Length: 497
Image 1 (cartoon, rainbow, N blue to C red):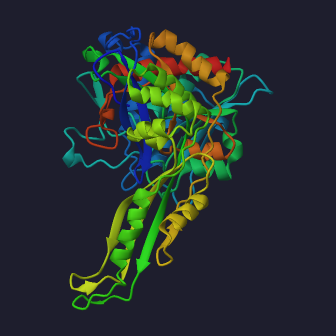
Image 2 (cartoon, one colour; image 1 turned 120 degrees about the horizontal axis):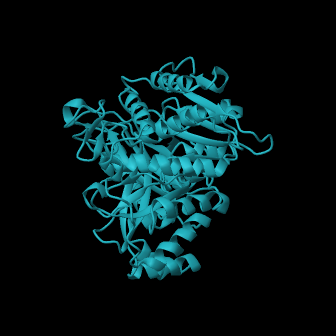
Image 3 (cartoon, rainbow, N blue to C red; image 1 turned 90 degrees about the vertical axis):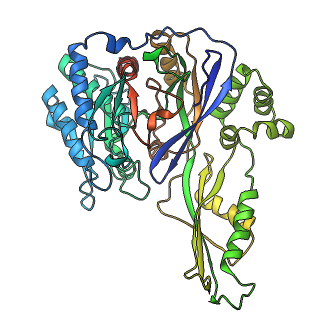
């Protein structure tokens, strides 16, 4: 999601999820000049907050200041606080459903059901995760678990990922209750835990597998779609370059490669050395290129973005979308690592450990391969391809838990994409809205596997450094929070009226 300082660029986005959850990368895609967006710089903070905005800010602050890290925090406590906000707004207990697995009492979540008038229309589901990545206060310039408003930004761990969206959804239902809004469709909300930590209890996965009835919906709105500035915040004169919609994502899967040897004294080396065998295997992984693939979303993305670029890569994107056997275009597109990853499954070595003493032959070496699997392919299918590529029976290749489901891309449904774009004309005039496929994974992968198409909504925006998400001094522009809140409220009303 990189940008330049001019309005003649559009942003390519890569999402990747590691052991600590969601991360994003940025790619600059120069395009033909677009109309300058008339998004008022800092307008939401230049004027006093409306009473409804003040109430929303209180919800946001309470959520952000509740520690929900996997080590010292509690999603259950955060979910309880959001439930209390909804109770105070007038939602009855029958519509507020806390949940937690008995063996994970701190990883609980909340489902809320706001009934519609139609007995025929399927509900829509709003999804957000409550947990956040670890933050060491001694490393931050500010207390990461206090909401601090400074220089036109909110600073805190989770200020953006993903408590901004969780607070927006919670506040939205609270306002609907207070104003007695009657939607046609039932609106469901799921606030979950476990998105940021591989192997931890995951509330979205639990609901999809164990309580499908609670979250049954025609489609879900999730994180993953963002707008991007040209390098400066809007409050300091920057411009909004694009808004993106996450339409499908790769599946995240780790594999453990293991080699064992008899070992022995290092003064008498032998060819049977676990380190050498592992090194040879990793070289083969490095050279492994999975075949190129397109789906509806990625083909549309290559066609849309490619035609705006004014360079050779843009022309190659369009050519490759038309003919995936065009090797010359593929070689050129592959020079962009985000585009290269979008086109295929990728696997990369991320950790290696082995040996037991400086003066001994190694007895065991293990490496981790982190794979991002193109939609439609299973982890086992990928494992077999790795076995064939390494072609060495002394190297064992096993799936590391947890095993994620096969990624399923939702359709580019105009009934869902259309309102996002139509409302963007009102809230972000002149700004293109671009569907893309994430090259990592969000919790939407569990809903998709359960048959609930899931889309990452636009609305919020970020700078090229992605605002410190998962890093130090995470921030969110104040104007972004309030603008996204209004945009998403109108969006949900459009889907449910």
